[in-house]
Length: 268
Image: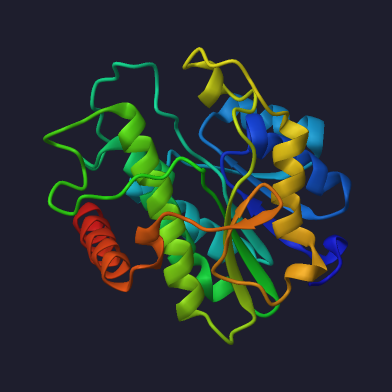
């Protein structure tokens, strides 16, 4: 990879928690950081305090994701790293089923589908060497393609775990597609129960620190040892095996077809 001082790095969900921690550390190390968020006031604070560039969009609406991608395509000549970090948690149980502006189950929409569309739209900005890092979770649950958006049997925990498995499946799929291009795609569970809004809103006591999660994520962004590693899932800094569905070609094809169908319907 190029020196950090020569890199442009986009971090989604950068106004809070792990994303903000990453944005600050990458900026401190000299990278040009493009920090995404949905709250204008928080983005202004981020620009003032961290000296980063900012982009605003609500990832719960694919037209805004599409606009975000178009703005970045026009504004930058190159992206070296994309960190798909934005997400919503499982919520306090029992959680009511929620939908995005496009009528998609909310956690699937924000945690996975937004990053799927954003990444694919931004691929023309990547040239070797470059990296895509998807911040997923150890919490992964099989996607039932008979009811992938959980119309029939909803609970927030399951919705969250399915969305995180979808991120891992996309990682493996895109890595295969980009094999030999010099663009790597990896995913990780950064740490367990960091003190983020997502965790605290469930009433769960933090178990890990933001520093621990940032260390694991920064490793995927910056480590020279991972120059040729792609399509892999990490638990913290350790290589790990994801849910079996992530390595199943037919399941990944089903997810890809569903994703393209949902994106096309939202943008038609």
